[in-house]
Image (cartoon, rainbow, N blue to C red; front, side):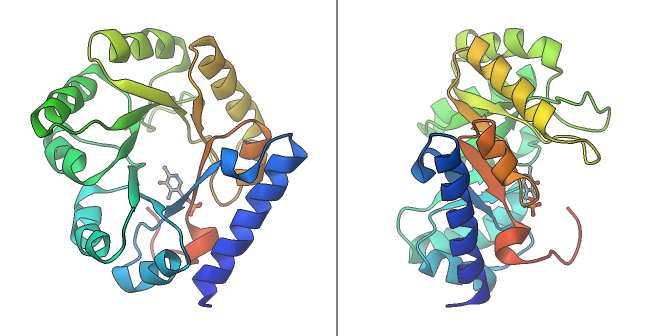
Length: 224
Ligand SMILES: *Cc1c(COP(=O)(O)O)cnc(C)c1O
């Protein structure tokens, strides 16, 4: 096994353990292997190990490597976890299966229009800026409920759940708890939260999707 395949197995078993410690099963939690900055050669061993669900944060970078990999491997599910500009929506809808970063009406409408045009139906997560950080994407917690409602009714999107990236210096627990409480109030099942440093904590707070990059692929050469 390659190093990445070993690390994938260890991340999966840590998810299974965290899930069972909290009365859930490992397959209640979808592991999204975040392959941003890694090329097809680095991703292949993880696909060979049976991983099907991957995350990327840039449309253009993903468009450079995933069409080829999708031809080689069946059943890949691609999640866009980074910010999306409306001028990239067409490419994003063509390539991805799930979008985690919906946070404004203009984007929600563009996605909905483009899905109709391409006759593709992607699930979306609404990103919530739980720490109200000025530089960070996402709707503010106070605006989330109304925005989710507009995504559903005005834009006709299939909202799967909420997503957050807690502020770097904070303990993530309160952010995960807030996201969960908001999702419950909106009757949303999906919770996309938890990265390499805190995915077990996220599972303990009810994450349904964890986005894990460096713990599987190793350290990235440059921060993204
Ligand atoms: C890069 C990234 C991750 C994965 O980060 P790691 O710390 O490498 O696990 C998760 N979520 C988002 C939105 C990211 O951009």
